[in-house]
Image (cartoon, rainbow, N blue to C red; front, side, top):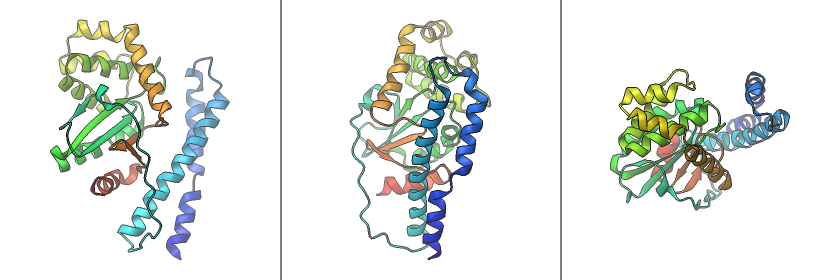
Length: 251
């Protein structure tokens, strides 16, 4: 009885999330392009986050009931539909023929994506060669700071896959990202700056970021971070991401 009561409370508890979205938009609405309707965009984000909030908390609470409180779930677990997403075009590490492929779709300016970076590192250390890990970078604004950091990652990948992962790690380690951050990171990790700067400002690089953004939206994978396991979307709660990823991998 207590568990079900708690579940109902968890699924409906979203006032703080809505307040955070309101605060975010009040702070950042002046930075939105003029073509954006702030009220419309805010409304869409609140709806998307409410749906995400419901799914994440339902999944996390059911996990707790089953694994920590001894409840047995009699309803068959829904099987996520496989996403027809070509992962070969994105940076990856680990054996490509591994039985498990984890895909992370993230934004360098997303705080949850940043918080989950050590979680992913822990998962990769634990499962090692059993996992093929794919990284897809999106940007909340392809013409803003998030877009420029993502363009820097793309340009690092063009020089060398190992340098991409160094750039990727450094970008998430930065306390505050700015328009100058890509070049700063590029210097620190030893990229060829002439090639990097030329790539960073190239129209085709911006087009690549826009194309990736459109691709994840087409597959209904917008929102960061988003995770796929063997091209099937899984709902991860940032508070216990390691336990949930570990659970999905062992299924």
